[in-house]
Length: 429
Image 1 (cartoon, rainbow, N blue to C red):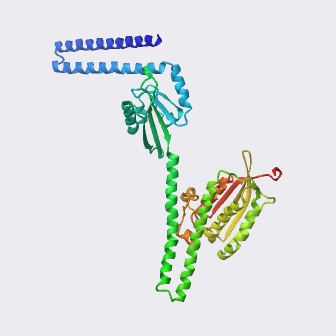
Image 2 (image 1 turned 180 degrees about the horizontal axis):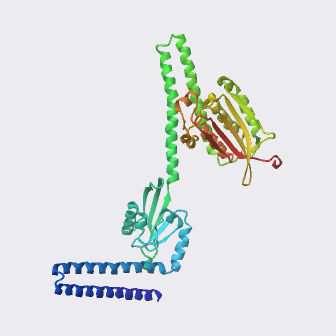
Image 3 (image 1 turned 45 degrees about the horizontal axis):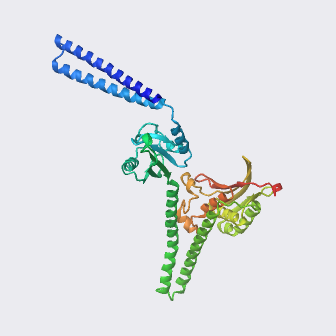
């Protein structure tokens, strides 16, 4: 009954507005006739003026009708079935909207409104989505009644990929017949993982191909022109050993990284002392430090620093950090290893910093240093036997230990790499 009253009121209002516009047009016609009779206007100008006034009046009447219709949609409270549909939509993990046979929005969830903020109940969804692929899919589903899926992308503000599943809602009759459900599934995480996989395979293949090409070339030389040249043979064999060692280290790092990523979600539960691990690492690298003319200065804390961890993995972390400092910061002649604690929500973190006084790292490189195969200087890294995986391995090991790596540097003033992990108090174990 209420809906019938509303329709009657809309009809009365519509005729009232049209009647008012009709009187405006009649009055304008009389005024123009008077001007023509007085000689103030020619018949041609009077006809043009009348046409313009009539057109404006018609547009005003139609616009008023559209505005009133929109207000009526907003003013009418949602029906029980609409509220139920809203509740169902809110429970969907993906962005979802329901359209009527005219393409107007019936319901949407928060994820859909985040994807297309301009979505408004009762309005055409095409105005908010502005995606030709989706509009065409909705039209095709409305004609054929068969579900369709279509992929599309957004480039602003960042690149994102989606697949939209468009399907008719069956089992409905009356005014609810012909409803169409759209569900948008975010493909961005899987696309980015796939891009990372492709990049990883390409980089790994390139890194392995270089030493393999060197080995193959020297083998051909030794089998040919240098077969009886003892001096050349000794020199080539030394280079071949270096290349084979580099390739073996790359494979070892690849396997280690793969193994850590596989169990990254499994946190270690055995207490280990970081001070003892760092001392072991620095002692084992003293020969490299002496060869580079670098002093390793360790400032140990007065008490053990215990964390829940895997001793071998943490040894690998500090081997990478200290060895990098010795290789790339050797010009500073000093590497400092320090310990500190920091209070955080729910406990205390232990911080182990490795600082060199070398040339430092430009700011634009810092965010990417833990990416696989990323190098500031590719030539220097290869000359030092680096694989480009060391800091990526450090990051993933620390993630497994509920920790993280932070990097601070300024060109010309050295670099500081800090490993941070939750501290375990000795009385807890």
